[in-house]
Image 1 (cartoon, one colour):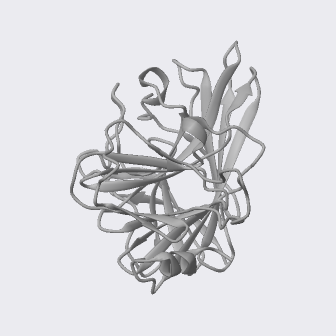
Image 2 (cartoon, rainbow, N blue to C red):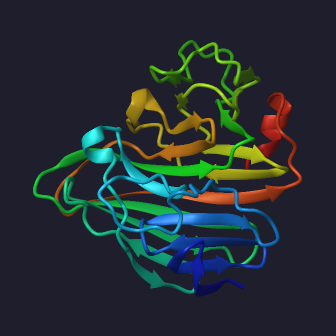
Length: 294
């Protein structure tokens, strides 16, 4: 049975813990909306937390913090890096909570994250909402970003295509600071593996038609699933999954379609998180395929 309680966590006095006996999740309401902890009830947090910012609030500069956050893409300095350093409203529910950020002054966009944990099983549903509270339409895409601890391997699946098809069915995009020959990226049967390790900044994106991606670290697989819309247009040259990496962390990101959001309208993007135990680091296509959700 799911339990929801108010707690303090890592210096933040106002947090909410949600657990069902198999997995536990913590959000802070002092900043955000941010999910700062996700783990098996007897395990370690899968997320990276920035020790220099954990427990702090306020300030005019955007902070990494770590954990899981909501942005709206495509990325740009003027709208993406809006500070989320102030308290958020929180409504508790039987299965989780709903977090609502004040409207961003610069963009007129309001961010909401709603969390609903399963009564049993290592699973939770995260719904991300963007509402246009401004006075003109804006084109954007919901962008769900999980900042994971270092040392693991990200899995980006490609579709298992029809070999008789004459048209392309997959794409892989690279950001300007990414070396396409980087030894941390591995191409295996219908999957791309990204090994988190020391090296230069790295980012790729893919049109993950099957609607999932994963990060395997220390014997656990953090799997995110979502609905892919084959008729929609996605940002960043069609990417629905992106992987960004620095020396100390790896971001596992999924995106919803680009939409023209009129004043007063809301768009949403839902991820379903799973946390599986006893999963070896994938080395080939068979290993990667075994992680795919049923």
